[in-house]
Image 1: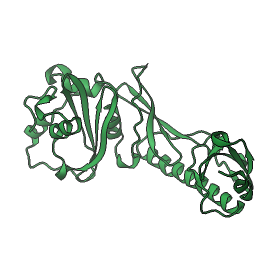
Image 2 (image 1 turned 180 degrees about the vertical axis):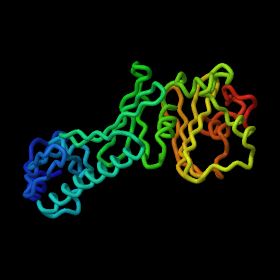
Image 3 (image 1 turned 180 degrees about the horizontal axis):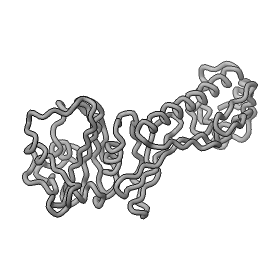
Image 4 (image 1 turned 135 degrees about the vertical axis):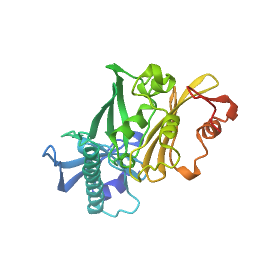
Length: 291
């Protein structure tokens, strides 16, 4: 962007091209409510018609500030303050959702970054939120050993009403040797009391049994496609709405919400996503193929 235009907006300008930076001195400082520090200067990377907050840590990751509609320093400052307050709102909202799941929210006193740790069945996950409130897994370990991270996997925290459903959904991202996947491959009489197949539930309670509208429900299906392992996980959001995930050895393949009435079945879904015939999709540990 033209340096003269930036100076007209009250910004101090340094550098040119991709290295161009602009600094705004705030007339009303932003206040860090956790660390107690006041932010009086904000430095941006200039990217086309946008300012990308770059310093100090309290503003890193805020949404970019569009310069097209602004006409002066006050308007730039108002955009920065709005983006900062939006990020604080997301921290408060997501912290409340974490507590509702029995998780401990942690807010960095300098960067205001929100994170938490989720530990279930030997799997320990570190979850971090960006400044817009979107979560993803930033670290994982099983029984103390670090696991390779799949490439990116944002998820909507508010869709999970039970801690176990969230843990099971995310566990499907990490390797075929996870506890749930291992259980799905093992015969019930060998695996012990932790294993439960849906066929056993149906046999015990019959097709007339009901699942209450907001009860947690979590499912895992382990598959092989042309010799490669995959895991399909589904966690109930509410009613007949689920959040589904298909993951392979390289991480996430597909993740979406779906309505139970519109769901084609695991095998047809996987075959369609991987563009293979249904016969190439094998259910591991199943007594018969799924139609």
